[in-house]
Image (cartoon, rainbow, N blue to C red; front, side, top):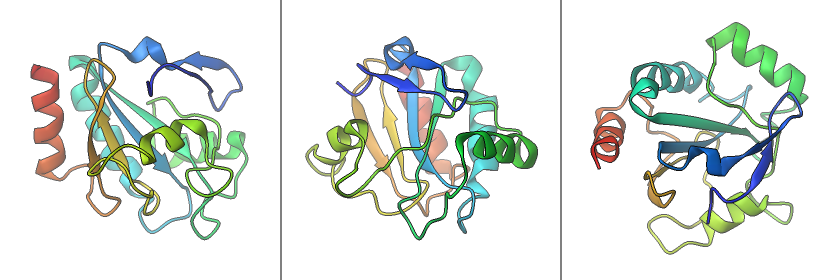
Length: 159
């Protein structure tokens, strides 16, 4: 199960993702030097709006698409805080495609469609229900402030 694993936060601490069971979770692979990087602002706005109601956003920096996340964990953390005021959990850089794909993303991408399939680009989003099941994939081009995203989150929060 996706949330039954421990991941490393940007600060090097280990975090058991099972802590997030009972919450609606959005997993997103992020990058600092991408045309979609401004989505950090929308993700933070979602977290501010829905976090108190039970949403958590988990960001996973990845350098898999044209080297758009070249920074160290420390640099990524500073960039996100200074430029976008990110307060949602960010994890140590991982790979979301290819031979070096992290087991978290290998599990998700091997699920049946419409969830599974390759991660297309930075800022691909996955929504998990309160039981920890991946229930929706949202493409990289869909901005966090899109009404479709809010509607999906609200529906899951009400379950």
